[in-house]
Image (cartoon, rainbow, N blue to C red; front, side):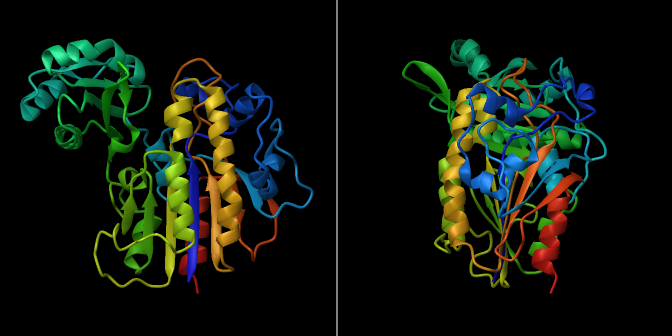
Length: 392
């Protein structure tokens, strides 16, 4: 049995791309380096052994004279700095045209159609905003009117927030599906519709991460489709299923936290995950190759967007504690890849994603450690997965 394990530490970029200013970012953005500096160094001995500290000077992350992994820096080919663009490129799909953003809110004709088809009677906000801020500001009006809170950001997202103790979660999901269809049919080129459910906890509007859902555009074709078509298992953990709109996925499970995603990934590596329960097609027979694809979103969602560099650092350290357990459970026929999809530097001005390079760490018991240097294209990952899982 051959298995490739890809773990994406969402938004853990390692330095501004040369074209960062085209994306309204500053050359000083470097998510991992700046988080390390802010925290006086990070303790990540397991990723350090793989060679993370050899890529750059990251405070607290040791350089290894004899790293057990291959390490390098990947430059994005696609025109974007968001989750969908980054993950699609990892899977081999380059986005030549950037997704559309709406810095002044969405067009009135789109909002009018959304109100008509959802029968929600009206919307609140329709502007770029921080999610935690906008639900705090508009929660009372949301309860008074029953209108959903619709907002965007510097990314290509149509976000819908509501209190699911007031309006059912199923209604939120239905409204998101309607928004997705309207955006696609209208050619608005919006990357994701995001369901942002929240509840009032201890008197404060609090987002419920485990019930978040992303409704992405459907990718044309990726390595995931090739693997699925060849009879391999493609197991999406976290929001992977949403990022690819289920395209090329055979099994999926959502998570409410990084810890849950890491535990599930470890279970999958140990062959303790009940894949029949999370299979799209029950009782289907698969071949002996598997891709385990995990997105760890807390770094981005809970800490990057909230300018919480301390929390970001602790999240990276938590991820590192699982790396040695995963390596310990790997067989000679397993390949581990740890990377990121973009940046979200919590130490620079703003709360949006940052256009950054990303690290890549590659480990197998059959590979010798080495410096991969600078690699042009996140699709490097698709290429090594294809070579590893699909070549005889």
